[in-house]
Image (cartoon, rainbow, N blue to C red; front, side, top):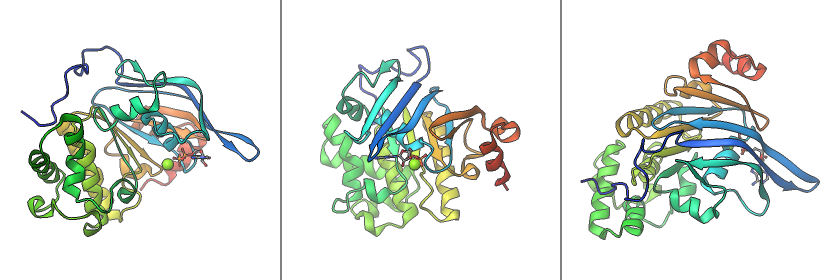
Length: 276
Ligand code: ADP
Ligand code: MG
């Protein structure tokens, strides 16, 4: 049995009809000195179980704020949800306190950020951090959690994990640190992983390695994967579907190749121009 077996009580994949994640007409704004800035403006999209969806758009188009809202991580009180709904497996998340969503996050939903250093605690060993959710949520022993961490590090391609499990985050290179972050995100066998610019902080060669690792893990684990990026090139071969955001709105959506080949919005045409 896998240590991170899904708890009973959460519906098994496929027992509910409808998409795994449904964002409907979501609007989010921030207080600014001179009023409110609409960061997300009537955004709707679905992510099916096991699907890989790219959320594309230039910097400032509302990608991260959308993800933060889904994860219950919207900074309050500056950030405000003005309307719409977000449901995960049929359960409306915006009806519930952020703490509920954050409890779901880390188990059923996991997030990977651009900069692993902002998510990893510098004074805790990576193995402790990878195994922590398992310990906290499932009450497994320290020794078992450490074993699970080693297994996860192995799965994300960290060499000699049994030697590295007691190292600290700063002892890893940027790419290896992102692998630690991915191990942490996947440690609870989530059904949805949202990766917000997971390769942006990395060297070009490492970017490709991390992206293909995510694609491999998606195939092996079957979780739904949302890849947020401003860089069309890094997700072209990985995603099934693309959602293109511009100024807080979804301006284009469809199979990723179709968006590339027949994209009608001037911004997607611009992005296509930058493809090799
Ligand atoms: P993206 O991830 O697509 O680059 P974001 O979702 O981070 O864009 O930002 C969308 C808009 O919301 C931008 O105009 C940004 O400046 C604004 N914004 C994001 N986070 C905050 C915040 N915490 N406070 C105020 N404005 C914010
Ligand atoms: Mg962003």
